Amino acid sequence: MHSSHPRLAGELTFMALLVLVSVFLLWTSYEISSFDSLAAPGSFPMVCAFAMLVTGLINAVKTARAKLNLENGETWLQQFGRKVTPVQLIAFAVLIFLYMLGMEYIGFLIASYIFLAASMYLLGSRRVVLNLFISAAVLVAIFIVFRTAFSVVLPAGSLVGPFLPEFLK
Image 1 (cartoon, rainbow, N blue to C red):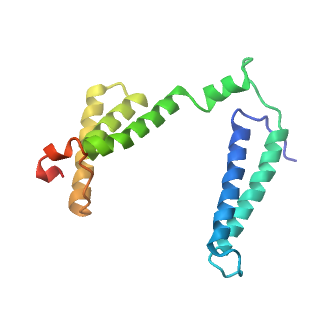
Image 2: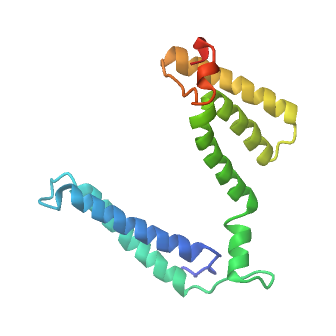
Image 3: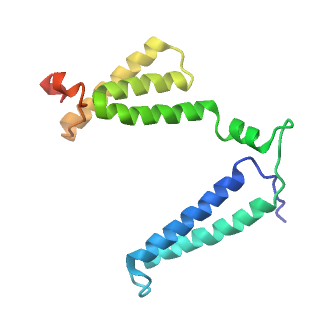
């Protein structure tokens, strides 16, 4: 017999999101061909989304029935913040957002260099000189592969692009 486990902080939230995504996927797959026949293009995605919805609902009910396991006298919100959204995760998400913005203005090379070095530091590597060297080496390799092998033009950036040498554009 399967024994139930205590509910963890954020587990019910995750299950609710899974159910909502399943409903969205079921609706969008229905929009493909509105289940005209079993061989219709949307049939297989609808079956998959329906299975995902049913299992998601079953697990959401099981999760909602489980007792919330709070540690050290914390509230649900405190435990959620400590376990599900730690500061390092939030900082990395902000770093990714800044990287996306930076690519538009300062280009792929500079934004990627800053992102790689900063992310290595954020993830625990405190050897700054080594981080800077590795970031540069990785970018050189990426640049060579994408420019020569794949002939991909990497974004130069609206602020920096006009001042870059032609071979870096």
